[in-house]
Image 1: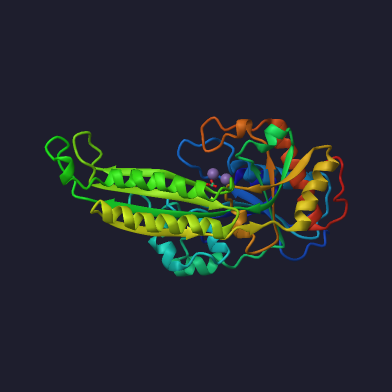
Image 2: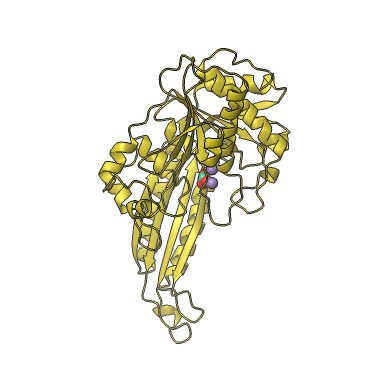
Length: 385
Ligand code: GLV
Ligand code: MN
Ligand code: MN
């Protein structure tokens, strides 16, 4: 917020705790209408790097600051947003605030979300000192849905290896893959690892293992490299070397740019869960946390990004985003575009994630150019940006 203030932006915080920094032009500017917005998130996954999300927030502030400094006269407000809870790290669900903004999260679903300590989103929000005017999930959601935009453009590291491998400076995102998240729990009787003979066991961890292998098989059976599936979270109880696992809890992430293909894998996993539990005489629960549709970027924004890259002498290519972003939900509200920059070795969601200052500067220039073009003011063709 102090960086936003230093850049001369007006700060507001919404009911979900998302922070908005807005520049409504200088005195005498004919500013009107809905903002052209950018932004991303600063929350993180466990053992994360420093660039995922943070680039889009700090880069957004810098893009608007440099447009101001260049004498740009916008016709629409320019805004940078720092979204709350893009990562599912704390509450299990991804993109919580942009999901709410887009009307894709209802009060009941928000009320069900709890962190590992059993703290609800509202309790956490109040504890952090925001949403104090809102008593319950219903009023929080109603307020979060009040936002309106004329366009949204997010700057992000690619999180994959393509740009670096092809020696391309800028990725103009055309679509964002459709993510889904499942929660599966197998429950058995447990027992003593020495005394309980194999024939008497219903080992929850073995059921989980079979399901993980079935996921890989289902994903590979589509024969498309766009289908991916991951069992990223795996908790067994009692997690002791001399106890047969009594419980196994899995969180499963399945994505594809093709929704039908993604749903085919999901259905196979649903059926496999039932079959494996039955065969191994276990109880089970199977919950689909989210099955989000893919999003398409706006053609004119993709072109503006490519044009911006060209103006600064940068190479660019169009590509899909296999990671999800708040842009997935912003696309349900307004015209959306995303700018990718290379990251070293395509590494992300790892502590050694890295993007160079040159690549970061390139991304911010193209972001500033694109926002200027969308905000429609005079002199959006600044070569000195
Ligand atoms: C976002 O971090 C994602 O998992 O794609
Ligand atoms: Mn991430
Ligand atoms: Mn991110």
